[in-house]
Length: 507
Image (cartoon, rainbow, N blue to C red; front, side, top):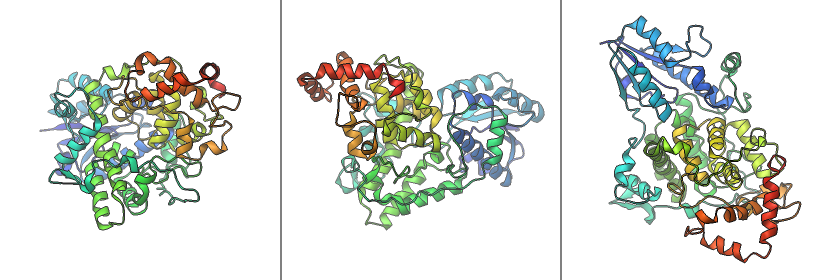
């Protein structure tokens, strides 16, 4: 039987069962097409990394004897659509069957169902064989429960997959060591240098320019650090285990003026395009820890929780709640993003640092995303549509299944608390507590009013006041509302917030 199989740019799993046998009657197809490069304005490094990873993967399959047709963005015969390119191949190859791997994105899943259903050739859809869970497993796991709390899911996954448990009990006695993972980077502490993987990017970048693809961000050989092969991904994982794991948990929430990578693994891109699997990553780290018992358990558990817990949970929430998830806006926020989200030109040092880092590296760690850029957007009432587009575009590891639930659920409370039990907002005190941005800032993190008052402070209290009807009954917000009512300078603070909201472009 002759068959055509489509592989998407984030389905680069060389260990997939599809590749267990070589058969000249099977034609694999991969394609770089303009619509998938332009549905949001992506970071130039994201486009480059995906194209390079796809090309390397295609080359690897070909070298292993598989039959593959690859459409580059610059190929003259590229129709720049799944349907157009598949029509050409169906005429040439005359297949008896078509198949594709399950897309992780709801939009693409519907699109490919329509495309493949339009041909007079039977088609099937296969698992990517990557995740621990199926798309809709959360419905069974949380059956009968009012709230789909991540911690319950995480413990279920630990037990089910026998990860860091004995007889159903967690190693070390606790399931979660999050309270040990919130340290500020000590003064004069120098993290190890990040591993920078060097890749020749010139040809691909030229092709992206020639194709006229609109993009954001900057790219230079010295700033491009993304692994684009499985070997490079495993190299990055090894570097993390041997050099960074020892303090990952301690400082995973830290903010720093001087260090953009800190103790983070930076393997999320490799995971999300499936060059490496979550299972092998978790077991690799646990095995290294067991051989190096001087590493404390909170370093390892915090890492495992991000992958086995949070990553799988977010994917499940995405699939169980789409397509409604994509339009939720519980707080009815309507403002546009300030223009400096695209340039980094703001006097607020924490935001300037996080945004410029994102523009230069297509990377920021989770606290920069959640408690700096996301926090400010929520406090100022940015429409989650705009923030969705920004996060999805600017980060190389951002794919909608993981970006959207993190943005709308965790960061912007747009789902009304289905993922986060309270809005993740803070004043400047949290940012000052976690790093050194405030020391060199134009604004004073201690002040709520006055010319030099940090905007985060008045905006925080204004947020509480503005959304009192929806948030005041939240048991995790009660103390802050009681403090708000006792403030003698409340009216001045709210006036300052209004001034900031009217002047967002110049902050």
